[in-house]
Length: 323
Image (cartoon, rainbow, N blue to C red; front, side):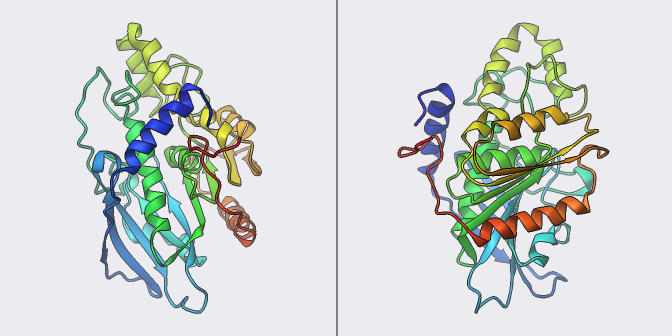
């Protein structure tokens, strides 16, 4: 296990989190979807707080065994929405777990069902990016990353899911969480990372003046004396830093005209990722723009990876890991 601050922090954080039972609760939901079983899921995330998700299972696979699964993470401000928002992967034969991000809801018309009960213990600006930022133990994304790791465990524990073929996927904040979960959870077999947020941060004063990075700029403007403390916290959650410990195949996607999650930040995360990887660049694409060719490439990538699924290996923070 690495002896650096990153390894020590995540070892302590995830070892502590693992002591809590997942306490998964599922309720079948009737929907217009034909050929799928749909479940309203909740589980105990960080601190035991309840996290909501949708689980969609392709039916009629009795002869084929459990299905491979994509665990989907969401963009900034989005909730899990309706199951009809998330039918691509089920249509391709994958089980899918669509996971709320704590406290976020409403962006793009997608409502969430997961509160964030953690109190505000430090100066911050409105939003989530600076919540608790002066201490890694209280930072908002500490709990969000723990929730993501535990969501993967929820998927792996369902009898309808092939625990050896689980992928994380998302774009923007969803790409950030997908990459973090892929690095931090030994259960992830592949990652689809599109325009990841919170990657390759120079410092809180030199980020794009676009939401949600703008929250860091407003924080630096309001609390200039606290910027060094905030920067030390961010270093533990920067997914370009975590990427250096990746262990499963990953497909990275970068939008060439992205003014929010700048292309160079996605390139940096890809460059540092040591496991088998592929990079797709879309020179004329903007942030989180619809991209059918990318979806087709992702489907081909997962089919190839899962056809030769490798046995799980310990994550970098776990005992027995050999980098």
